[in-house]
Length: 234
Image (tube, rainbow, N blue to C red; front, top):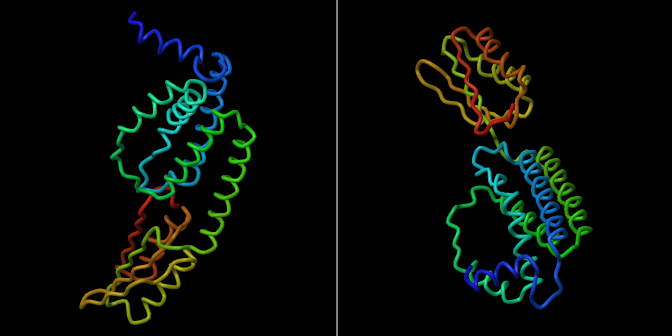
């Protein structure tokens, strides 16, 4: 084996450098802790944000990302020559994949913070980080539910003009009984029909199945279509 490769292997296995040797068992334990932390963060992502249709499912990279960052910072601590080589190599790496959701940046930063804290033996910091992260996510979810920021779906009802002038108001009341947060966003009239569009944030499964039938029973010839921009909105 070439001497240069042997030197690299010696640095990786013995931690030779400016600091003391860590040993393979502590190093393996740190990687296990980092992997567990990354899996927990990936689970939090699936619970709070995986249902977004525009997300890039970035949580699939968290396990490898976590152990990689931990390994890099362990090398930086225990081998100065190797750390300089790693930093030089990483400086030429460019990632071109766009981040589709701003929340994904936050989860990536949590993975990085947990990995660095693990690599520096600050396991208490990791525990505190997870507690505060979960609290922040729960508060954010509660605030979002209390002040619904936007529509995640739409209910479009088409009424024939033969239904009479009171039909739109009756249909609006019917929709709000099934979806209390529904908002009437537009009304379009033509010679043959009136189209009502409602924005909704969430609707129950029972209402989803019953509403079209009740609309048709309320006004003969009416149609009801329900759309959602993302999965798991029911």
